[in-house]
Image 1: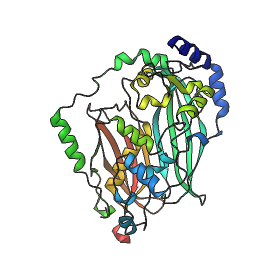
Image 2: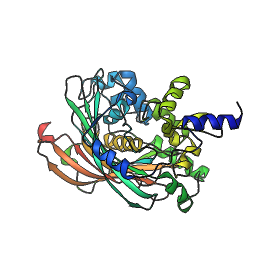
Image 3: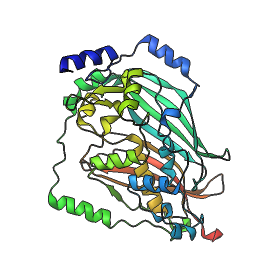
Image 4: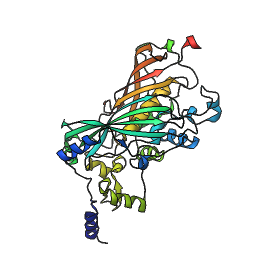
Length: 392
């Protein structure tokens, strides 16, 4: 088939070399208002149904978290749970999110709120229930003209019908043509021009990281103003994104290949585009590993996944809190892209101590994620319960 014939075939199928360029219309907004309160289908987006030992290991490695509590049976048996448990972020490996409406518009994950209610143990069956809770806007933005912000409430339940976690996913939707038109005004030097000396220092910092592990971090030993240990991610590479996706996290819907993918794209042509460099059909999700797609989204190069950044935030918190600490809640806002070649350093500071309504001795933290351009790409907060000497 010639290039012209391919283009005609794609045109007939509704698939082109560009990402879909939808517009906000009154009809679209009315249709989305009618969906508020709806429980959404999740079948196409579930990646892990059971928390097997290997699924937990694959996910922990995919976010770069080598805490033995997630992977070493001998170590975990001596720990507070008596067995391997999953990192709290494993919920995202079960189901990252789902697609809902906004046909042809671009989207970014903008903000995350999660409360954690109980650990995930090996063998647990996790079921996600997702609800569309509405949207704000459209209103003006600097990035892409008009935008809306929508809200998905995602609840994760185990086989005993116990709530494991509740995640409110806030996403920005925008008109891609505006984002593309404004891309030049946001350009920076990419890939980042690291020197050999800088790279050596980054890698030395990473290799020096040691999780708190089995040594308790007691609540009484913490003071307001104390800072968390810093962990470093990067320079972010293509394999980092592949490892995250292979761990089961994020693709919405699940990534597929060949005939399975083609049939899905023919049914939902706005999910895909034809890459002119390879002539292959690619999903919109490939903005996270395909530079051409990322540019169509208004970015310069491929960039990280929103909840991937939250997984790093959770890693930094469990790394600091130790095995006897419990993450109760997190909040994070995503600001600026984290591009391939970027480095992000995550940390935080204790801003308050209290005994909460559950009777837990908790610390409240301000968290951050600084890149090499001195941008805080994920300002956030967290609540962590720590062991108390009065209960020791």
